[in-house]
Image (tube, rainbow, N blue to C red; front, side, top):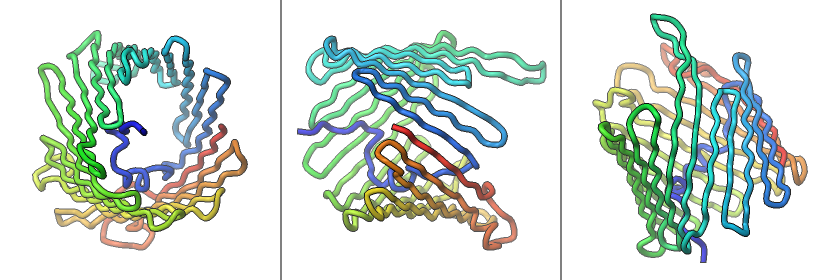
Length: 309
C-alpha cells in the first residue's frame, strides 16, 4: 500500500500551473548522476546579469538506514544533512546544518552578514498520515518551528495543515481540504492571519491531456497584495517524447489600475533516454496587445533548460 504524500505535494493543480514554465531570460543546465548508493546533482544557470551554480551530493547507506546529503552554491550558501530512516517503523529523524554569507548594504556602508542555523527534524509516514516537524536553532535570532500534517480520514479525501511559528514572533497557519477521484480533484485552501482563500480544480481529460484552474482571493485590506489572481493551465503530451504546456494568468486589480494579463508557453522535448530540453516563454499580454493605459507587471521573457540524467 502506498504511503501518504508530504503536505507540500497536495493539490495536483499546482503541478500543472507551476512546473516546467521558464522565464527571466535564464539558461540553465541540470545534470544528475547515479552510481549505486551515490547520487550527484548539479545546476548551472544564468542570465545577462548574474550566474549561479549549485551542487547537491547524496549518499544512502542502506545497511544502516542512513542518508547523507549536502548542498553548496556560488551564493556562499552551504548545508549538510543526515537522516536516520526507520528508527522505528515509518519514523525518520534528521539533523541539518546551514551556513550562508550575504552582502548587506546600509547607510554606513557594505558589510558581510553571516547566518548559521541548525535544524532538527522528525517525520512519520504511513498509508494514512504524513507528519513532519522541523525545529530551527539559529546561532543568532529566535528559535522557529514548522510542522505539517497530511491525513487521509476516508478514501478520496485529504486534509492538510501547516503551522509556522517563531519564538517571540508571529504564527502563520495554512490549511488544505482536497477531494476527488483519479481523474478529477478539487481543493480549498486558507492561510491565516493573511486570510487568503484559494480554489483549485484539476481534471485529467484523457491519458495525454490535463488542465487546471486556480484562483486566490486575498482580503481587500491586504497591504502586500490585495488583488485576486486567476490561473488556467493545460498540459498536453503529444507523444512519449514531447509535452506542450500553456498557462493564462490574470491579476484582477481592485484599484483603478488596469488588470494584468500574462501568457506562458513551454515545450519539453525528450531528446533521448538521458537528455530533456525545455524551452519556454512568458509574455506580458498588456504590452504585446496594447491593453490598458499603463503596462503592469514584468516585461516578456524566455528561458531554456537542458537536463541530463
